[in-house]
Length: 325
Length: 236
Image 1 (cartoon, rainbow over the protein chains, first blue to last red):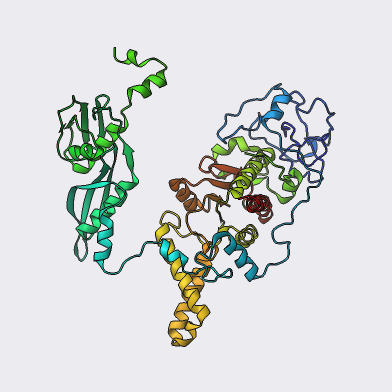
Image 2: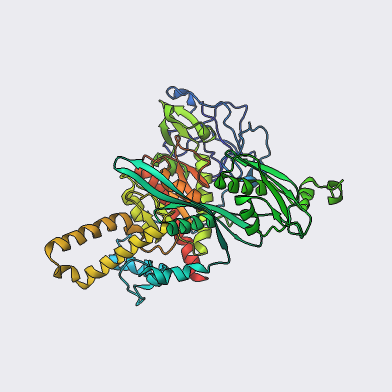
């Protein structure tokens, strides 16, 4: 049985309501109503009944309740059985705008006159500039995109100097290890660098990169680190709001705030992450494994779990004084 | 978002066969709310939902075009390839109709290098330098040029990452969809009964097998883009 949907006005006269899923009813005005109990039509206009579904071949509906208000926004809306809801409300939820009188349906895209290549190119170039097309009809410079892309470089030196000072982040190498992949011909050596990137204002990121040369590995890991940057919630005395523990892999890290003047008391990777974040007073301990990369990641996770007092108070709807009791 | 009239005609959609889905056995249960019935072992999608989503997508696209955003249409099914190319030309958008190279968006810097090479090859071809080279080199360059033309021809005017991506078949263009998700680019996707509606931002449940249904939906979107563009030209 095909169930009708709530009426929607498209380009049909309002007295006819449409139902979907009637494949064979290509004759234009087709509406099939089945169970008249859930029967939605505009109360102001008379419904028109058309051939019932009995004449159809075997129909096995997949879901029995199909009368649904169209989902409001996202496709994940819950489906509910829709009974006796106000038509007015329905219309306010979804009603396609009416067809304006002088609306001319546009031609399909390949019906119109064929445009010559030049016209197409000209139109594109008007919109986007010559970009990479290699031909310019508006007198624009064809090689304009070259200056926008960073030069891939001549010899190494000129490029290295550019790289040093960039966008305010300081990089520090936590660990560089030589790793090996054994293949039939022997051992292939790579270097794996773990780098922490941070400005001292509360943004840090940890990155890994592998390459055959140490320098290249460090650069790759810096790029990676810049891609995953998090913010550290800090109080005005440059310490954490509260204790936190987190683990990543087998590394477990405990972080604890400290009073001003303490400095960062933590080992290895944890210390570097906290220093580059700008935290000045904290205590940290690596409780699980001593793996540098995993500990760095664990501190990041631990820091992400922290909340400022003001946030929590807002979320819970209670004044901050309550939280300190 | 302004809502306009997009001439979405349910009977037109029925004629084009937009409501047919894939076979019953291949469905994705997440599509349950968009399927209205089952007929001869094929799922039938709910056209009113489709119409609603299509009009929302058109509104979004119209809005974006009137702000001067860039679009990318991805459709690599060989049935749909020419209609995608036509649609993109008509709407003045970028398109990918041959294979979607992995990393086209996420590895944009490498794609840019290829585009540079494409442009340089074209320049050389135009200035006629290719004829002065020995035959073998010229043949190699021509081959490279034709390869770049098929894969990158549609995006040769693209200067950066697009703002909205329209994908024709989610099953087929899964890599493209994944890339857009990692980059955070909003996507409009044509979903069939065997696809996942949660991945794309606006998913239009429709038939992705029939050329007529793809063309219908592309028509509407292209019309919306054109309208948006013309309003952008009038007042930028």
